[in-house]
Amino acid sequence: MALFKARKPAGKPGEWFYCLEHKTVEEGPDCPAKDRFGPYPTRAEAQRAMDAAAERNLEWDTDPRWHDKDDEAPGRPAQ
Image (cartoon, rainbow, N blue to C red; front, side, top):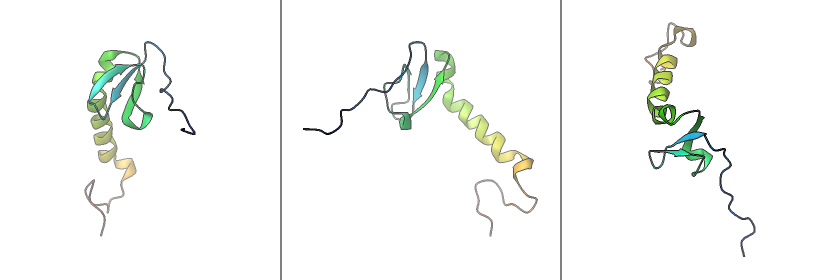
């Protein structure tokens, strides 16, 4: 007998998520939070989740406010 019952992730109709494991869009979370981005207000925004994340990462990596002059290129450790 299991001590804990598996719970379905909570969500509301009309909330859209992008599942990182299945690479699909789902309405209301079907997968665990660790495997998804969201919620998004529309299916289209959820479909664009990976592109939006890549754009934010690029902005962060190239933002001069977060890098000292002596820093190496983004993604490379300073020596």
